[in-house]
Image (cartoon, rainbow, N blue to C red; front, side):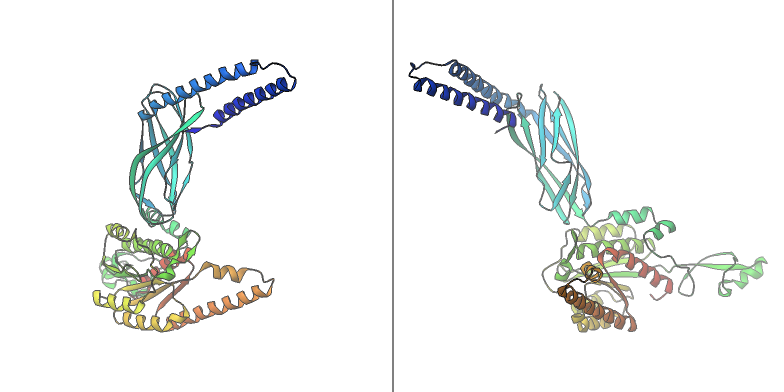
Length: 447
C-alpha cells in the first residue's frame, strides 16, 4: 500500500503538532518552570490514537478489493502503426463505492491514448474503460496484466492490485489501406489515391462483349459480321487480360531496416506489396510472394480474395534481418520454383554498388518473366536537397547527395533501356507508384 497525498498532509500535520509541543516544552525548560504535560501534548496523544485507529480501519477495509474482476476485449488482429480500440470491463461485487486508477501493462513498442484512466465504481455494478492502442512492430502481441491503484474509503492510502487478464492478438501489416481500397475502389476514389486510369486501347485485351458503336471507337473494334447481321454498326468491347501471375520478390535484408518515421522500409514495402496484391487479385490475377535476405520462403501464386489472408498470415511476424541480401540466389531459386511467365516485382533498396549483382539477377529472371524493380530510397535524401545551404558542411552534404541521386538515376535509366520496368520511390509514395505501373503493364499487354 502507498500513502496518498491526503495521507501525507495529515501526517505532516501530525508532525507539526509534535514539533510545536517540543518547542513549548523547551520554553518551559528555559523559563525554569516545572515540567508539565501541555494541552498540545494531550491533543497530539489523542490525534495519534485516532490515526492508528484510522490506519487499522483502512487496512481492514482493503478486504473488499478481492471482489473486483477485470476482462479485456481486443481484436484478434490489429494493423501496425494504427490506433485500435480496446475495452476493459471492471466489475465491483462489493457493497461500497470504489475509486481507482487503471493502468495497463503494455509492451514497450505499444502506445496508448486515454490511459491511465480514473473511474468510480458503484456497488455491485461494472464500468467500462475505453482506450486506444497502437503497436509499431508486427508480430504476436500479448497483454498479460492490468493494474489498479485503489483508494481506501477515507482516501489516506492506495493499494495496488494486479489482475491477470491475458489477451493475445496478431499485429498485421497495415491492412486498413487494403480494405479502404476494396471498399472504395471506384474510378473517383482511385483518382483520389493518385492512381491513374488510362483509356484501354490496343491489343492484348480479352474480348468482353458486343455493343453498339460509339463515337471514338476505332475501326479495329467494329465487328463486321454482327454489323451486317443486325444492320447497325456493332463494336467489340474489351477488358483487361486475366489469369496472369504476379510474384513479389521482397527483400528482407539489413538495408530494409532503415526507418523513415516510426516504420521501417520493410514495413512500408510490405504495406505497398499487400495493396498491389489486393488490387491484382481483384483484377483476376494470381499473386505469389517470395521473401529473401532473411527468413526465406515462397508462396505459390493463387487467385481469389482469400489469398490476401494467406499472405497476411505468412508475413505478419516477419522482420528484416541483419544479413546482406543475395539477389542472385533469390532469382535462381524463383526460376527453379516457378517458370511460368509472370510479372516479377523486386521490392528492395538497390544502390550503385549493387549494379553487377542486379544485372545478373535480372538477366536470370528475364529468361522466363517480365521484371519490375521497385527501388526504395531514403526520404532524407530529398530533405537534404531541399534544405538551404548556409555553411560549407551544407554544401558538401548537398554535393554528395546530388552525386548519389545521379548515380541512382543513371542505374535506373540503364535498367529501363534494357527492358526492365524501374521505379525509384520514397516509402510513402511506393504503393501509388507500384499500382500505377501495374495498371500500365496490364493495359500495354506486355505481360
